[in-house]
Amino acid sequence: MQSTSAKFAIGQVVRHRKHPFRGVVFDIDPTFSNTDEWWESIPEDHRPEKDQPFYHLLAENDSSYYVAYVSEQNLLVDQTGEPIGHPEVELMFGEMANGKYSAQSQMN
Image 1 (cartoon, rainbow, N blue to C red):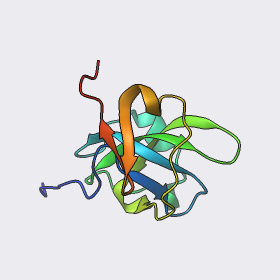
Image 2 (cartoon, rainbow, N blue to C red):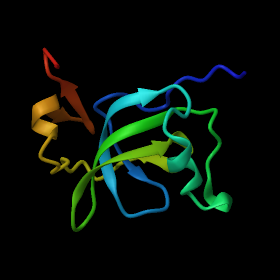
Image 3 (cartoon, helix red, strand yellow):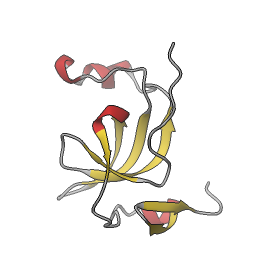
Image 4 (cartoon, rainbow, N blue to C red):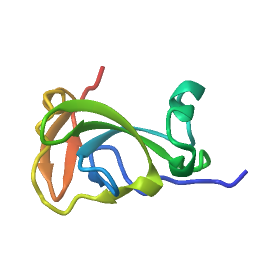
């Protein structure tokens, strides 16, 4: 099995490569760690490889806020410099600077 390291960090603002949403990373799985049902719900020709980091995001699009689970190959650094409006961001993170949120001093 290939050793993987995460390209993105907790607190970093990213955007999806194909779909119109962006978010802040709040957790990272070194490889796929979701359910088979979730995996099989992705059309086979769009399924990413499992042996790569997967990111938990506090995500937003033009109409809603949600939690997303995204493979590294489908993420890019968000270059807008805009904060994420997801209501849970302020519960998990401090101020945003240079495209990254600082972690709160104590997370539960």
